[in-house]
Length: 118
Image (cartoon, rainbow, N blue to C red):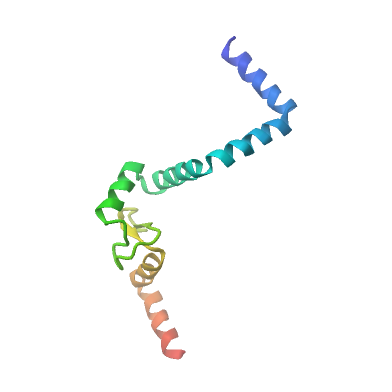
């Protein structure tokens, strides 16, 4: 069976059996949800930051599984320089968000003014 014929046959079969195809896809997702989500995270980190799963794991281990700033064991996010795209380390959400404020002088001053007013 040649490739083109098989591809067309499978396309027609899926079209004619849409309900069954969707049912099979839902069952597969339910059985493999954790692995699918992990692969999606790996693809996301590779696409946005150029980090392979091995590089991510090495960074987590080298930081002891905790945030590079507060040292708490929380869910880690990639910290990167928005101007250059260079990955700096792994931070918890609170530290990553706080660092952004510190990097922008206008935002830092606006934060100080807000705190002074309240």
